[in-house]
Image (cartoon, rainbow, N blue to C red; front, side, top):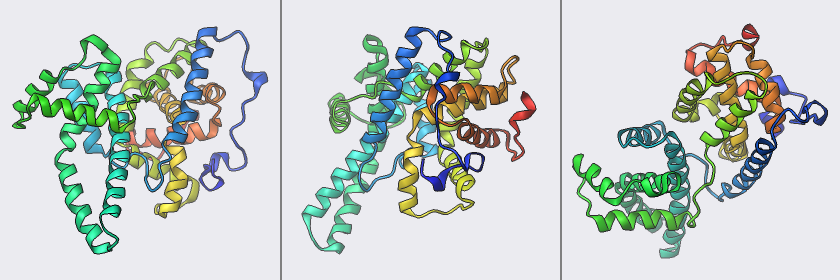
Length: 321
């Protein structure tokens, strides 16, 4: 982590795993194997999301996230689908607009002409955003549900219901466009998988079955308020609300770290639910070992999420221990 973004609670330490405290034999072999897979996936994701000239999650505003959540709910799709769909849509937009900008620069060297072409191209892309988002949901449903996925006909019926007249061919072409733009690679694991895995890890220490519904709700809020969450977290590390684009780029690695975000969401859920037998500080310590993220940073981000949910700045985890 960049030292400028280390939280006050972790001002003199980096994320270090104490192997001696990682009690061998406590966790099942399958769990450890899958956790290793998530670590590898997270590392690869950190590299893949570093697209020059772009910032992560710029298109995933609260309005866009809420729209995807709403569509998935109306179509009775599993919870996992909406998080895979958001990842697909965000990746599509990053690569799509990068390609469009490169095309714009090739059209003319004149800055005025470039901006003129750029406005025309982006205006057309904005009109297609609804269909692209639904195509992302369609691809995600195929990945999660396979044979019971969202069909082209399902998409057309939904769009027609809301006054959007797309034929089956256009919907099919949109799906192909989104899929090809992301390199025909659907992210294997979403934030849903990370939070579920961490909950399973806590299950080896205490009964956390009743925590699952709470964690799902916290995960939803965290996605809807992602920008505000990381803005406040940035302030905790720098005592500044405003940051330059360069600082934003440096901070981006923290934002795309699913292990960090997932662990913090679970710890926040423990605090909110007030689980018997397991407090948030202990949960943070356990998840620190599993995620290789310092417990103080996990706690700090969890506090920010809890503050947003509770509407107060007086969250203190020690009260639940």
